[in-house]
Image (cartoon, rainbow over all chains, first blue to last red; front, side, top):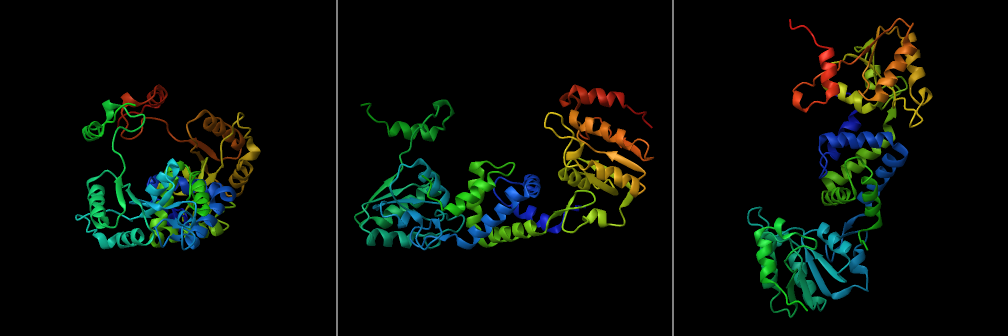
Length: 200
Length: 200
């Protein structure tokens, strides 16, 4: 027996599907929207409708944007000779937040996984080879997650790009900035040790 | 430097204002919407627009609904002689989930608080006195939170309703079902001890 109107129940049910929200917190979020009608509910409804109507995938890199080319691919100041391959748009955003990369991206939309039945044709892989050939790319940085699937995908891509003349690099592995050795896993410590550098 | 489109940034900013979501989790939620366009983003945009257009406050009790009277006030099977006073629509939903009350509600929209400048005129209090007089109410159950403000408000309402002939009751205080004494605060234990009952 729950007497909140059906429209609200439907909204709560949809909100509960978002990551980080469960049925209870979705209910609380919807209640807070209803209370802040002018400042939250209505702007949110407008913003969502606008995003649903305008957001699309960039035909070149797979980033989200509002035009055929995303803002990064359309930006002529970004180095077209440098492509950073990421699994996901979220990873692209994380790299952009770090503001340490001035090239362009290529979003795979996943990683190879025999277990989940994800083969090369499910990912944006053919387009990557084509971009490397067409755009005169000097370097492809594989910024994939340090998981087994991520690393498998990285090796697959490196194989595919062998012979194109583009250098293929990987993100460095090591101790995170501010990280404490005591809390790090053995794999990270071994990797950091193997990749040790001379103090200059 | 964040190159996600402005529409998305605006949506993330609005989502981050929901309780239980911060900037990071709002970003994650929006990303998941964009990925699940057909199953999540578009239905959510429609549901929100519908709620923004249809949801209103019940003129009688302050509950949310889609008509002048909410589903509970419009339901003739609910006992009109019994009114449960709650602070908030969320509390009403919690009571409805427990499915233990067959009367009607009255949502105050807050509690008296000298500190926050909330006086009787800021709450739906005059309407309560009027309902008790007009609808031949037998009993008013004060289901307010067990906080100082909640209890102050309860006493204020009891004073206001004195002489109307309606019985004014409070929710019982005691050990929660499944509660362990070791984890309960002293106030609850004292209250449960004072309100002890004979085992039948």
